Length: 212
Image 1 (tube, rainbow, N blue to C red):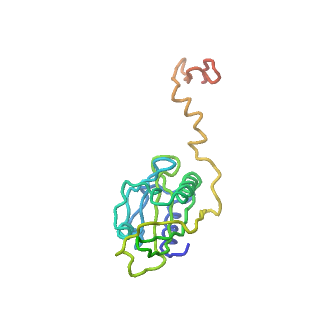
Image 2: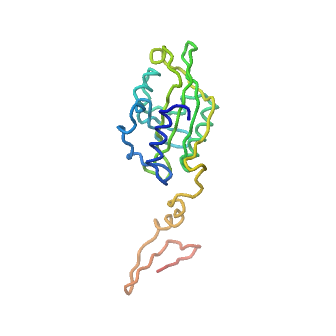
């Protein structure tokens, strides 16, 4: 990580995370992000190919001279970058880790600036990360930045930073229990002589079956 703001945001996210896949969305406290807050944004994972902006910081919007809320984050990139970025984000949504990008932001007149982008997974309504905390921080401060809008953005390099030094391999508890939970949705409770039975429709192997 090249920029102090990116390093600070990663440290804040990692401290909140503890030993979990990611911190919860509502654990974020804007006041703890300091001067980086205007450079941040929140994304919502709609499906494998759609990550919509929930909110974008004031400096992010000012540099592009537009609002982002509701737009698909992936649609902002060239096709090749879009596919790679989607793959990276879907990977860290279940394995944890920070997607770190070095990007080139360019104006319609051909001016450009190099920036660092971080995408940090957040837990919200799913056992995997369905929100992302992002930041976009220029590595230089040309005089035109903020006056001439950025019209295009592309990836120069990318990596995944694993907080523990490697990807998580343990499946979330809900994934390990999923086959059992699926049966519970079709089970009924039967009580007899102070004992309770769970009866599954159709049984576990094609025949009715009851277990105490």
